[in-house]
Image (cartoon, rainbow, N blue to C red; front, side):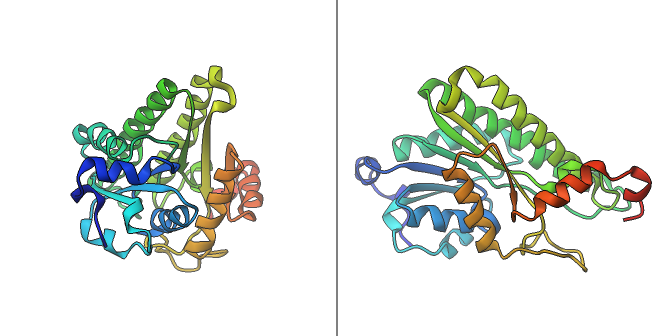
Length: 256
């Protein structure tokens, strides 16, 4: 696959001038990768990031001239803004910014190293790049910020406490950003996509139900992006589970 960052900047930029432009943070696997493939097919120029550079080559597209790769570790806060700036510079602008980088591990024994790693990615890294995107869109006057949070953010979890807690943070933080950007009206959109179980490497437990194929989840997220939804559950049936989670008493929740 051709890597646009190896091309002269003027040639790379000229390819993107007439296209809508999207950046996906965490696009080397799972939902992020599928979203990259869908968005490329829809005619966007796409900048993608991930920790494992070799996995960039697995993104399925015939439109190799429309994609730019940058290696990024979301836990390395000192490099995040500069990497985003470089991607925008290479692409010549930005319309859609998707955060799909997230981690979570079972941690019944409460090993703090595990919890700390989840916090660094799902809170610190997420906050840094979400803030960067909203500042950029404010200066520009328009744009669409999307984050892949989780239905897990609605209640606590004794098996993976940091995952649920950090996703709750993301849900609340996105609402705060939406309020922060209110004076821009519909010119800046913020979408919170909350998947249930999706068939990715993170779905590790046995006995899971309503597990969605990655492609189906990505297609529904992209449809929500087109409709500029504020909140969407993936797949749609998980809206019912979200309602039940909000009302279920703790005495029942702790037995699940």
